[in-house]
Amino acid sequence: MQKQQTIIEESMKALMEDESFLPDLQAQTREQAFKSLVALLSTPNHIHKSFLRVTLDDNTIVRIPAFRVQHSDTVGPYKGGVRFHESVNEGEVSNLAKLMTLKNALHELPFGGGKGGVVIKPQEYNIKELNLICKKYVQYFDDILGPDKDIPAPDVGTGEREMDWMMGEFKNIHPGEPYRNSFTGKSVVNGGSLGRREATGKGVYFTFRYMMHNFLNENRKWLSNTDNIFANTALNHHDQKLSMAVQGFGNLGSVAALEAYQCDYLQNKIVAVSDHNVMLYNNDGLDIPALIKFTEKSDGDLPTTEEDLEEHEIKAEIRERDELLEMDCDVLLLAALEDQIHEDNMERIQASMIIEGANGPITEDADRYLADKGVLIVPDILANAGGVIVSYYEWIQGREAQFMTEDQVYERLFDKMKYTMDTILPQFFGDPFPLRQNCYIHSVMKLSTIMYRQGKLY
Image (cartoon, rainbow, N blue to C red; front, side, top):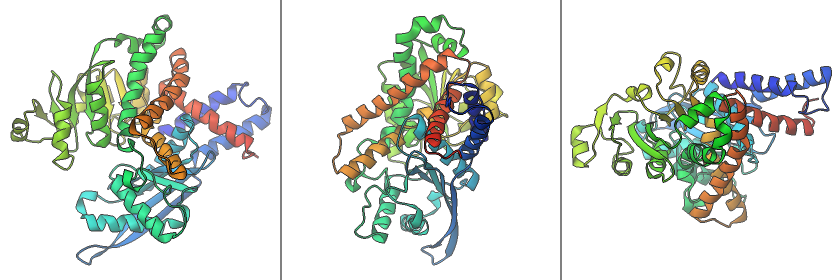
């Protein structure tokens, strides 16, 4: 995820040359201040690493690497998920913490950026062992966590169950102290917000739908008169039937796919979905509700045999999972892991539009290559903020002990994302920068202004 650093530096350069931004900084003082800003935004405040000592059911003791990276608390307490995955490493967690800082700034949330990770394959541990791993994580990082210090949330490999366990351990360690806001993404019975589980997937699809329907309808005349390459891509697909392929059919991908399947504003046909086992294909469109119903009874896995498909009356071809990225479709929705599109496959990508549900699914080289071709990429920093936005609402509800209905949560979520889109899209379609660059410039501008006003550049 080196592209983060590159885009931060490019954004700072553009802002330094804009004399209307921070006009009090002039000449050498301005250059020094912007060098300081690059350093502050490029490096984390703290990197915490430990080895969790866990006794398994067979009495074997293992030491499991675990991380918590706190990138920036300029805007507010650190905020970001904890992922359980075998690929977790310090560099990955640091980059994701940086992305959280930028994402929260873009959507004007009162949080900084943080991220956590545990190097395990969750499927290899039973429920008792996973519970112990969660407790150990809180015990080892207890001194840096808290409702006003650092507030973890779910991520890859974790969900409301793990957040409930972690909050429960935090409560045990801090009797008599506020604990409800120490973690977000909890179950509703434990103070979680209605709609939190679906928030990221709904937000991912909402960004695409709002851009391709609402924004294009309201601005079609203006956009038709520009020579912006990305405006041309969007207009070429406006009011057309869109074939969509979804990589990743977990919580995020399945919810986003269902939103697309049920959408009354765009004509979507979801021709392919994939998970860690398989890809399913149907040129006439897959039955997404039926697939979701199947995964609910199969530990989240898609059907892998003809017998499964026939038994559940699902019409689909079984194909190799990696075929999905390179298939002929209009839209790719990436909801799996990082670095899925890279220099080895970027020239074979046929989709004209890509939605980043996952964090960092496109490498720097591939991102530039696709943007130069006019592929319209809705970046992670914009698209997948639904989870942290509703985590913010959960945080507020916990502090006030007053809870919103699910409809109220979604209404506020969409209003928040609409506000961000209305801020970013006119600028994006009016200049040659890709959408990711526009989002970074906006985030860096806000963070730079706050750091300057707080006197952190001296």
